[in-house]
Length: 174
Image (tube, rainbow, N blue to C red; front, side, top):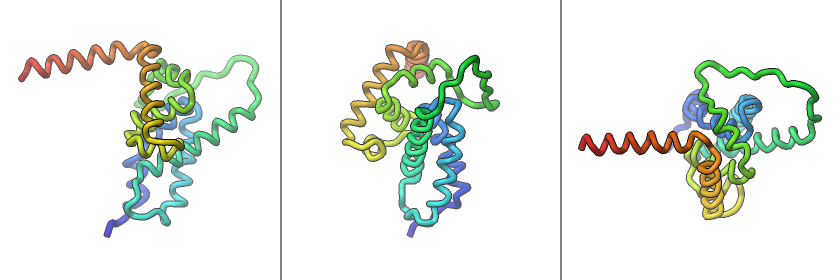
């Protein structure tokens, strides 16, 4: 029999993944609110969740729904006139403005598939369950999103070159 973890442990274990997904789908401004809303909803539903449930997929599903709610609400808000105030980041927070911009230019389904598979680490079957459709469709959307990022994200070539150099050094050591 599987014993459930305390909810605090669930938040500590999966909080960073949920925040990365929220940032990828919504951007840095609305991500914190969606993260909070995700865990408030999860806390209410956690007692009824089966002990053997995939917690990460469950939390990403909730985050996906909260992100949809935020996007719908944004569509109903008036567009502000004038300059917006500068946003501040929490100290130590991982954030890459170029990557956020590149993700923001992807179509919604591709952006979500990339976030859920590559940032949250969910298998394509779970991504398909969240987005609706088949695992093959989720794989295709993620592949198309990554291909678009390779073309548009300025840091991709730099990161790819650094990874290649690290692999070459590792090979030399052998």
